[in-house]
Amino acid sequence: MNRTADVFETRFRGHMDELKWLYMELYENEEMYAELCGGMRRFYEARNKDLKKLDLEREAQPDWYKKNDMLGMMFYIDNFAGNMKGIQSKLDYLEKSNVNYIHLMPFLDTVDGRSDGGYAVADFRKVKEELGTMEDLEALTAACHEKKMNICMDFVMNHTSEDHEWAKKARQGDEEYQSRYFFFKDFSVPALYENTVPQVFPTTAPGNFTWLPDAGKYVMTTFYPYQWDLNYRNPRVFNEMMYNFLFLANKGIDIFRIDAVPYIWKELYTSCRNLPKVHTIVRMMRMIGEIVCPGILLLGEVVMEPEKVVPYFGTVEKPECHMLYNVTTMATTWHTVATRSVRLLKQQLDIVNGLPKEYVFLNYLRCHDDIGWGLDYASLMQEGIGERSHKQYLNDYFQGFAGMSNSRGELYNADPLTGDARFCGTTASMCGIEKALSEQDAQALEKAVRLDVMLHAYMFMQSGIPVIYGGDEIGRLNDYTYKDNPNKAADSRYIHRGAMDWKAAAQIDDTSTVAGKIFSRLDRLEKIRKTEKVFMADADTWTIDTWDESTLCIGRYYEGEKLLGLFNFSECDKMAWINETDGMYVDMISGQPMKASGINIPAYGFYYLKRK
Ligand code: GLC
Image: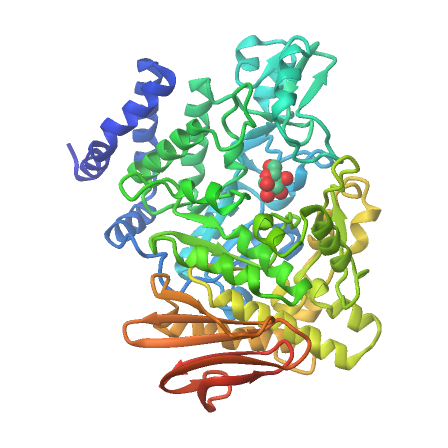
């Protein structure tokens, strides 16, 4: 046996018992299990030597992603740079933006008009033609690795597009392929599901099933009607999807964002969310990754309340995802912007800070999706704030209707039945930059920019990996042109999925421009974050009472170093009544020595105070 085979064998032996146990528990199918093992070996053998080298390095340093040096950015390839090759030509800009983790939004083959922004994959092994080829992807990941950058992609495993080869065969009546999805000859079983399964897109795609006149059957479609849910009860589906995952890993992908992972297992009489078997599948995927390509990371997309998110980390002995989105913190941040009250946010941060430090969260202000107002309403209720009226307030506020709002944006999937709605808009527009620019109000603009930068400063203060939504580094505004495109008009998420403004990006060194102001201020913060070890993911983190409704204080401590972050979420100057008596501090932005007691924070301002 040669040396490389030994590496595989050793890794395989480390997981063999558990993997087989879980597989058999789910599928009771020796033959398919043996096939999976053979497949893993083949993908291992096909993995190129540079990637294998990276695997070994990362295996030797399993905490490689848990430091303070990662900064992510996410964007659509066409919006950002036309195609894959274009991205390669923008790597210098990304480096200048201090970014070393790039999330390329879905780029696999999909059909325009039925793409859900690329989340309806027609072929997992083909890049969408306009964006390039698999060779381009390989060249891009290799170029990124040269620059020590990581590439993240979406692995959309809950469903395929109706244009996927399996779906086409299923539609033509092939029962083997129908068994890879959920097909029903009449609505009796779907009706039972509908009793307990909530809707993801109540307005744009009501219901969870779609009638296929040509097949004469119903198919399960949790998301859009053209996104057919895969049936993971079928081991063929699991095996093939794992081969797709390993195929993409071998193209040099570092981070897999497992799209819509809570949905991948369905059972009658349940909500079909977060079922125990979902965890079996994710755990198997983690082990398969650790055997074949241990350099990769799994990022779970679990857009749910904290108690549902955390189980996706698995346990210390049996980990599942490496990283998860800090989604409740994100939504609570915008609640804080709209209410000028940090109470709920402080409580939310205390929950996250109380979790084991091994857990790595992905922190963000905005992403490609809407903001769902998943807040801790039980706590808000104690202050007399009801869920329905509060969501209404938040949606009014961010549309710019309510009292003190300068925000701009649009509702998403407003459900007339429940009165529920989510919200879309870019960070800059939600902070008031769009309104101030259109009203040519210089003072308001300065305030809006301050809010935007303060929010980033606060986001960087959290442990984990911050990911900037591409364009936010230069204050990208809402883009209303999606309304002119019939393929996009019905989906308001496109308002914040506009094209990168390279004219504005050319002005990043000119601090009289909005782009220059935001870019330069973020640049400073990003550099501080990467060089100060107090930002290490496993630092102690806590909140400190400021005795003021609108100001938040976060403390960080790591190996003798201490940092206080003070953030003012109000448009008025505020006093933070903290009193840390352990010596003098220095403001890391201005270099001014300061006492950490009774601090006046200017409107939408912040301080990073480091203990001397
Ligand atoms: C995820 C994506 C979202 C998409 C959905 C269906 O939630 O973030 O954009 O619509 O999955 O794939």
